[in-house]
Amino acid sequence: MILRWITLALMSALAGVLPFAGATQGAEPQVPVLWDAKERLPKPDLSALPRLRFLTTTDFPPFNFLDGSGRLSGFHIDLARAICAELGVAEKCQIQALPWNELEDALQKGEGEAIIAGIAATPASREKYAFSRSYMQFPARFIMPKAKAFAEPVLDKLRSKRVGVVAGSAHEKMLRDYFSTVQVVTFETPEALYADLKAGKVDAAFGDGMRFAFWLGGSDAAGCCRFAGGPYL
Image (cartoon, rainbow, N blue to C red; front, side, top):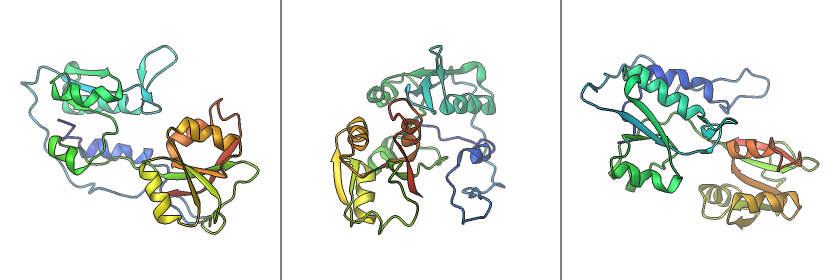
C-alpha cells in the first residue's frame, strides 16, 4: 500500500520544498498552508511488520537518483528514512530502486510495502492503492531562448508562436486549454523537444518546471535558454 500514514510533523517539515508559491510583485514570498497544523494522526502499530521497504526509481533528480558515487540519493530517499524514524521502525527500513515500469508490479507481488515516487492518483489507481496526502506541487513553466524570453503577461506575447510540448501529457492539455492562441507542436520525448528548442524550430517549450530547471542548468542546454513567465499551478 502506498504510504497511508505520513504524519503531520513530517508534512510540516516539507513546507520548505514549496519554492514556487505565488507572491505579488515586491512582496515577501509566502508558503501556503495546505494542512491543519493542529491535526494529529495516530501512528500505526507496526510491531508485527518484518520490514518496511520503499520502492522508487533512479531517474528523477533531485528526488530519486544515483549520486556521483553510485549511491541512491534524493529528497524521496531522505523522506523515506524520515518516515521510518518518525514511525520508530528505522531498523526495518529498506529502500529499493527499480525501473519505473516495474514499480507497480513489484508492489503487487509483495516485493515492497510502499512506492515513493510520482504515481498518478487517478480513479483507477485509487481503487488499487491508498495514497498519502499530496506534499508537493510541480509548476508548469515556459522556457525560451535567452535572447527572446519575456516576462508576464505571456498570453498575448505568445499569440501565434510555435510552442513545443510532450504529446499526450497533462502539460499538452493545459497548454491547449489555457493558451489557445499558440501553435501547439507536439513531441514524443522531452529530448526531441529540447533539441528543436535549441535549433530554433519552436519559439518556446511548455512543461514541468522542475525538469526544465535541471535541463537548463545542465550541459546539454549549453546556456541556450531560460524560464519565461509563470509558474503555473
